[in-house]
Amino acid sequence: MVTGVDTSTQSCKVLTVDAETGDVVRSGAAPHPEGTSVDPRRWWDALLAASGGAPVPDDVDAVGVGGQQHGMVALDEAGEPVHDALLWNDTRSADQAARLRQHWGGRWWAEEIGVVPVASFTATKLAWLADHHPELADRVEAVMLPHDYLTWRLLDTPAEAVTDASDASGTGYWSVPDRAYRPEVLAYAFGRAPRLPRVLEPREAAGETAGGVVVSAGCGDNAGAALGLGLREGEVAVSIGTSGTVFTSTRTDVADPSGGIAGFADARGGRLPLIAVMNCTQVLADTARLLEVDLAGLGRLAESAAPDADGLLLVPFLGGERTPDLPHASGTLLGITRSSYTAANLARAAYLAVALSLDHALSLLRGHDVPVERVVTLGGGARSATLLRTAAALWHADVEVPEPAEYVALGAARQAAWALDGAAEPPTWPRVVRDRVEGTDPGWAADVRGRYAEALQRVYGVAGATF
Image (cartoon, rainbow, N blue to C red; front, side, top):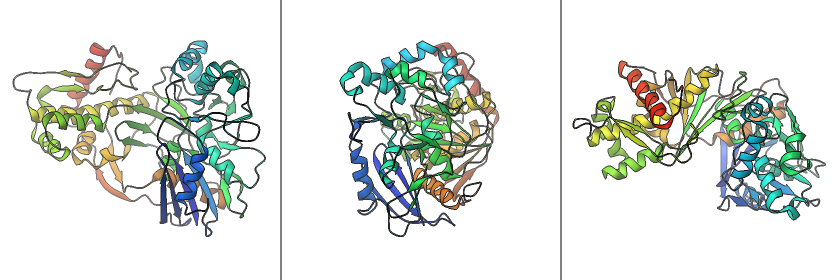
């Protein structure tokens, strides 16, 4: 038996899994405190609660921890937090991120580090701590990430903290191309280099618990999900929730000076190029509210409309956008005529908008020679048959929907089984598929993609958008 832990923003989820088959035999969960800054000791409390009172069940042979990326866990000499952990979604370090980007330039960051700084990344949060609380920064002895902190506490009297490449690649001070820390970034951002976790290879064990349970290296949440899904070359995961995430596990090197693609490492020794978009299922919910229907009713309206919404086009940047980088943008409705301006066409335009926004992200991957042959969809949006059929018409790829599961925790469990076994590759666990939709690319799809690319350029100045 192996256990996988997902220490996410909102909660701690724990799966105990049969190491040979990948079958989940039991699960548990416990909430995390709300907010964008959290005492990391509460994550340990949640792990104990989710695991039934002990950090690792008695019948488990290995454990792995996956978790939210980027969070700053700054500890003093005694291993106690000097400040609440600043989470990935804490944006107070936006000014420090801009300063870091300007200091070296986007191309240097993309080619030398693999990512271009935004307020999410750990380096910017350390810079904020040094700028705003220098007396606390002076007390910082060691810096970890959320999953590192739980791994460190699981180990039997650990001499040092450890991490893995996937999570280290989201700090802003670990180079994906060099697979090494870059002390000059820490010197500029924080004034010095505190003690950092040793970066383990994907199958390397971090050590053992006091009870002799093997502890794996752990991983970042998206890398864990890729491992849990068993993504293969040519498969891209698209997580469709309130916001959306597009990522894949690949051997292809990706350096994007614009910062649109974050060139993270994966949990298998390769790359995890990732793109985030802000406007997904919330666009559907807002449109349903406007039309005074529920989501099921919105789907029925959309299905009754022409596939191209009779030329009605919604650019869905209702709350600003991350990709393309337009944080202060608003949405745009184009192609309004007497015949096109109907409830059914507006509903259809909303589904097209979500699919087109994610299609733009997929096109960025293709533009960097990352193959996109099959899309594996996750999240609440993957439950919408209307959205899936719309996506299959626009994405130049077959669409697959696996059974809902805690894929980050499952990936952490798979990594734990890998560390336990010591084989060259992680164990092969079957992916249970709930639905498949074959990619169609009908005649109207090219026209819709073209109008969307034209709108991005004409309204928002996004040049060279290709689909």
